[in-house]
Image: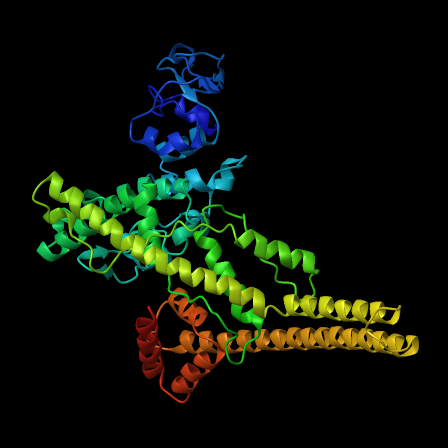
Length: 475
């Protein structure tokens, strides 16, 4: 006698109707609904005495199910085994059966699944784990006069993306973490006073972050303050080339452009002069959206009335415009220095100068008032041409040497950073990998080597303390 025949001796099967794997757990709890699905039809009147015949048959498709029609398939067999005492009925097993039972085609395939249950069940991330992730690592609050700028990106889980985060990412993260970090879901009822305050402040920070980052004007002001400091060089730095000094500055400046992708950055040392010229022409049209909050701005919250507030706003705007003008002067000086010191521009100027000299010599040799014999003029022209070619060859050789040096410096930097990360991995109480990488981006190779020397020969705890102090100092 098979399982179905044994069950037919009972008054009525108890398994509710089921449509999908997701419905299985709810149906076990008595929350099943009626669906269009494959079922077995059961008729109590057809059960013979002793139950010696198989009377179950495939039911027809229907919309509303009666109490005598049950779901067919592996869940029917699982319930049958439970009814006969052959399988456990605890919730953990039922959930594991739902996850591990896909593709089962026989009753025996449900046996010996303990190992598979552990592999299939997904562990839900706790709030504590979430707060330790790189996405929620907050920077220190920035102060500008009476105004404070907390880390809004860190509050909403975008500490890595920061200003690169899209509007859609900000919206999605707010919707997700406003639920996950809701006080009721973070155990505020059972927390002490200090814990309650921390939970409430964390949730409040998510709401404030969304208010600021979803407003274009307020986000621009925040991004302007949140950005790391970078200078606008007017000369080639010691130990560096024009390309390693000015190109990174152009790349950082692109962040503030009103027109994204509207400016050319030509990094090729051997690029044609026409491409180099396009680069400088495009930057003459540069317009920055960056805001410059003043350290001594008026606190608008302290205004007596709306007229007083309006006056304070005007004063603040005047102070910001002054800072904006100072930045414009620095930008002009930067663009002029970059073009004048660009080796590709210098090479083009030398070529044109040589051409002018050659034409001048040729003109004087063809009967002009410059005097001299034709042979002398030809010799002078040839000499000028040779000088121009030599200058071009020297410039090319210098560019090749600079390129080779740049590649060597790049390899050495990669090796040095790798060594620093290795020390961080072994250190105790070391900063997060993301924070250390941010610090190394700010330092040149000599600065990283100094930090390596400080950690050399130190214990894991001492190395961790050194790295942590360096990160905090560089933040």
